[in-house]
Image 1: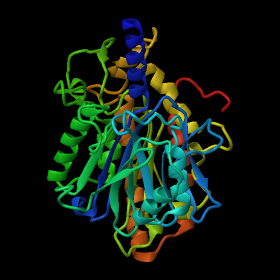
Image 2 (image 1 turned 90 degrees about the vertical axis):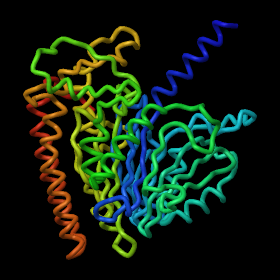
Image 3 (image 1 turned 45 degrees about the horizontal axis):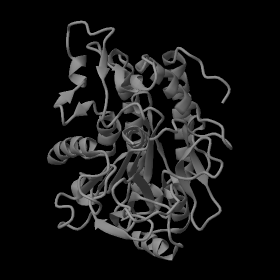
Length: 411
C-alpha cells in the first residue's frame, strides 16, 4: 500500500511540474498607459508550440497551440473583437466527490471562446450554456476591449469570477494566479512559490510604475529569483570569479525546464479600436527565445518562424529547444530537469544566451511600440504590420543562424 501511495504521489508531482503556468492580469489603472495587460508564462510537457491564425467562427483569432495538435486547441489567444483569454491549470478546485472522467478540455473551451466571445459577459454566457460537466479545472484569465478584466476559477459545474477592476478584489489593480484557485481547497494545488515570487516582482514594478509588456517579456518571464530561498541566480552573472562548469539547482522558479512559451497581451482602453490589441509572443523556451508582436488585424501573414501548417513545428520554437539542450546537459533520468548549466544563460561579460536575446529584442519591442503609437493616431495599417513581420522574420533567422550551433532538422 505504501508503495502504491508513493507511486501515486510521484505521478501527481510530475503532473504538477509539467502542466503548470504562472499568470497575471493587470487592469489599466495599474499600468503607465492605462491599458490592461494579460500575461501567461506557460509550462507544459508539450515543448513544441506555435502560433496559428484561425478563421471561420464569428471572430478571427490568433492562438498559441501545440504543434502536434491537429485540432488547434488554444492555450492563449486574442480575437478580432479584442477579446483575449488564457488559463492556468488548477489542482485544488474540483470537489473530491466529482468523479467526472472528461478532463483537459480547457484548450477547447478557449478555442470556442475566441471564436464566439467579444466580452467577459459573453464568456460567462458561454460557460452557462455549455453542457456539463465541462471537463475543466482551471483559472481562466480574460481581458476585453471594453475595459473588462477578470479571472474565472472554473470546474466542471461552476465558476467564481474575480473582477480585476474591483478594488475590493484587486486593491492594486492586478491579480496573479498559478496552479491553485483562491476559491478552492486551502493549502492544496501547486505553484505557491511561483505565486509568491511573481507577487514580489510585480509589486516592485507596480510601485515603480513600470508594469509594461516589456517588463513581462524581458524580466518577469525570465526571472531567476526564488522567493522561498531568497535566491536570485542572475546575481551569479555579476560575479567576477569563474563559475564555469557548475550546475545550479533549478526548481520552482517562474522559468524552469518545463517552460514552453510566453504570451503577453497589451489591450486597449475602452473606446479604442480592437485592431490595436497587441499580442506579444516569446515562443519556446523563454530564455533562449525572442519576443515578437502580433496583431489579429494583420490577418494570416504571421511571421513564418512562429507558425507552420498542419502538425509541423515552428522554426523559432525549434531553435530555442536546440539551445535549451545546452542549458540542461545532465540527462540521467529526469533529475537533470532540476539542474541548470547557468553559464549558458549569462555571465559577467553579458555574452550569455539570455543576455544577448534581451538586448536583441529591445529593438523589436521599441519598433513594435512605435507602430502602436502611430496607429493610435492614424489607424491600423495592415501593410505596415506585414512589412514589419517580414523585417522581424529575416532578422531573427539571421540572428539564430549565428547563435544556434546545431541546425534544425526537417520540421
